[in-house]
Length: 394
Image (cartoon, rainbow, N blue to C red):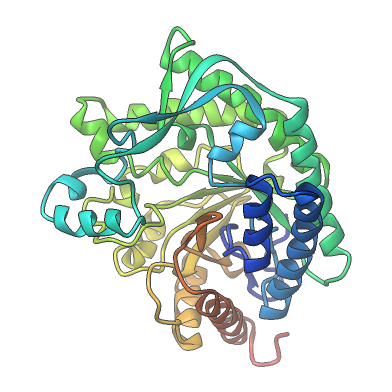
């Protein structure tokens, strides 16, 4: 994993808004239209090539495939592992919205539910473990397809590195039930063992692995409401993640945490200071942490007191998916410089708070805004580079 040795590098969290032609191919495939499978594979391959090229043109140094080959953030595992069933349930299994959902902002979340932006109060779908969780031959083929698509796309651009994002064990547990394993711990570690196979495959292909753990923090209210110790709950899940990462070089791994991609007040988010020491135990070379939106921008000061290990890199969110305002490059530069002055300029890669699309049909901003934010990120990184390395820096 490269560092910002001569200039501030840029990246993002991974999931990008799907283009119309890809969504049309997905729809045709789902409806069983003639030749839809071949058309989908062709459109997917071209869409990945296009999005990698556009990231590079926007100034992103470390791009992803946009997660275009996945149906959704964690439901993609249904296509790649055995042992799960997807069921309709009469009440929402998703509890990560926490106290805000039932408290002061209930009317706001009801409005979002009617718009389809958060789970509705009447209906949800749930992953249920009904047998041994293992990676399947179909899963291996789909993963290798995603790897091949991004490798082919990289041949046409000049970028520093590229990454593929995959789910963390804890984040599968946001919407789940276990009917097979004797304990929650056994369930977690079985899932971790299956995920290890896809983690290893990405690294073996020469790509960076990003492990996405967006639910870890969002269960703060729910875990405490159930009378459990939140730190102990987190620690077990990070032990499972480290098990999934066994044997994988840390400098090939990025670990992402955030407080959720949905738009909302986020007044009950757990403070970074309460769990950051646990995050730093994850066997990763870089930590991608939300830091750009108005609820969490102030937490750059945590790094004044918490030491980032010398061999680690920080990927703070410098622009956010949460608001439609496109950050001014000067604001971007100021945020980068603040972090660089605390942890060192070579240990900062400028990133985003979260992904801009959590599945094929859900986007957090209009694509024109997403690309404008990437361009502002790149321009701000250039300004920060001039301040941190001098006016003659590249």
